[in-house]
Image (tube, rainbow, N blue to C red; front, side, top):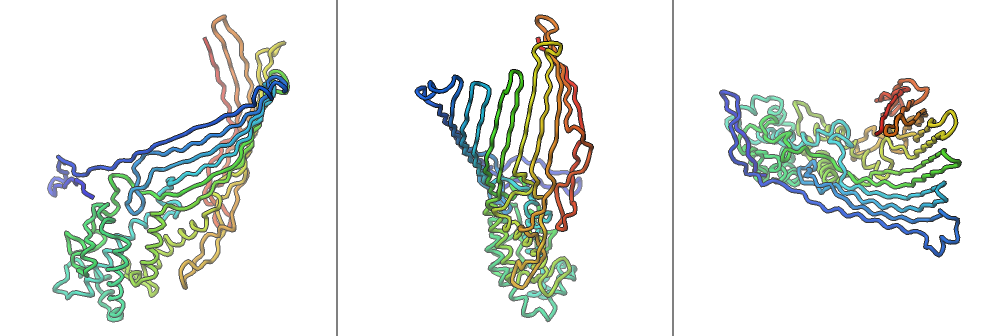
Length: 467
């Protein structure tokens, strides 16, 4: 991808001024459309019902996109994040004293962002490091195996760990196999356009023809610290992992006034939120990396001075990325982490309008949320032929505690003058509670991995003057 780069002066350390930019830029456009329909009982039916009685039906459809330039982990531009919502509702009203509304909703969020390391764990950074590191280490090994000392650049001979590994007679049969996998499987997974997106100096054509001295087009020393574009953003934007998430459920809300000045509101909801799939880009990349590092001889290349009979790259990729990726695939269709399916809220308030307590209001609220899934147990699974690892078991969800709180308030309102109203209110939140830790992540044995601070009882006194 064409771009302008500021050149650094080797003497002063300052960067030269960029007077022109040859990057044409990238744009994202979108269109959003929403509409709704409401139906009430016809007058011919309502006239036979008590005054103030109505039955209404609602439907709402929303289709929205967020126009933002974003890139997947392979450097390709992602589609806009798109959400589509359908709400179906029915509402019953009775004489202004009782309202009952039931809503069914369904939402699909496509290409929603997950952080770079999530949902593949804290080693997500290895997605970007692996192509650069394995390319340069494999190229250095093939140089050491193919060329004489006189032909080799000094930088390769100085790194004895890769030089001696590739020159070992025990690998005389393995090295040509690595070379063939490098030419075919590696270049199919990481073609020239992949490297161009990052402004890299990798020459894929040289790899395909086995020209190991010119894998990088500006140096013959192919080592991890000589490749350009490593860790670079695309157009200044950091790549992300995207996923499709579906949520659906029901919400019931009841608002009533059993007597004058006394209001009660009850709200209950049930939500199911599941990951439908990881983005196609990260899925394609993970499956391709598995084939390259596990199924071909390329996974046998030495890595940072170390190697194993099973293959250093095979072992590293399997543990750091393939295992959590398999967990994520198993989670498809299951509840989203930390999801609390059930919610219930109750609010009540009474206002005195006569007698010595005229102007006083008193009320309270109760908030309750269901137990969330904060982790999973583990089990031994075969994640590639002949290789087993202990990974999360989605059939052993570990639940956190339910969450419940009480709130109270007391207020008073009166007119100070004909034009000035005064209102004072004391709100007490989380009545009777103390500051404590609440778990947000659990280890496979059920012990707490991470916690958040739950505030204890708090109060707020507010004064308001209206004029």
